[in-house]
Image (cartoon, rainbow, N blue to C red; front, side):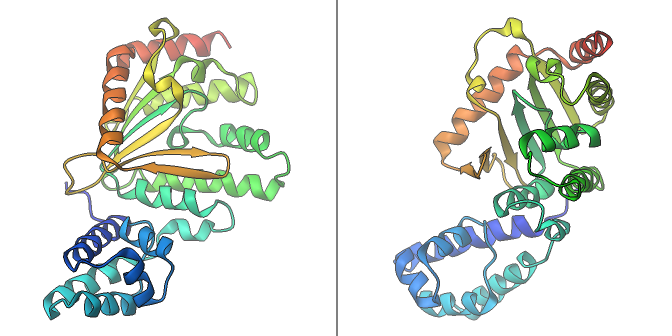
Length: 284
């Protein structure tokens, strides 16, 4: 079954086409931005597929680039498809723009490679684990804020398990399963959930043991995504307290691809991972 192409992928396709057409017209980003009345950073986001473009702006760019009617019609179609509102729009009051953008991309990915060295990845978190880390990270959060965070995480998990879910290739540093979050009871429930998730067809879960020693990915958590109709990963995502970084240069993709390969060599296989998680859970 083929994964349907969602609005975030359409934005990426449209942005790439607009960037190529601008280069073909020998027009600078500054000139194009001024022509449609937006800032240069906004046009950059559009061309990178991180922001939708209004259809009137598509028409103006086609005039500037002197494009034919057929090209205009194709670009307008992509613009319409990229403007579709996703389910995550309902959580505007809960998460910042940079994370909503990640969630929208995640929903359309075919493959996600993720490494975590502190927390269980969001896709695999239980409700009480989410509550515990939210209260720890945001001491000012109200009960309503925490509830919304739990609802978002649950909705995200449900959406990404329906239809044709992205294939999750998850690598966890051993500290993730040994660090007791919330309480022993909360952590036991979370470890049980990890074992259950590891049996799903679209999930590959592997732990990098302490005995592996030092390795490149220890420098920080990351997620790398690949999308339909693309033959290589599109970007590497890393977040921090007040924002996120998307690394898209070929050199960056190559470096993180090597990191994933190294993780695959060092991590326990899936059966040994399940056995280790069960032992850790038994000792709680």
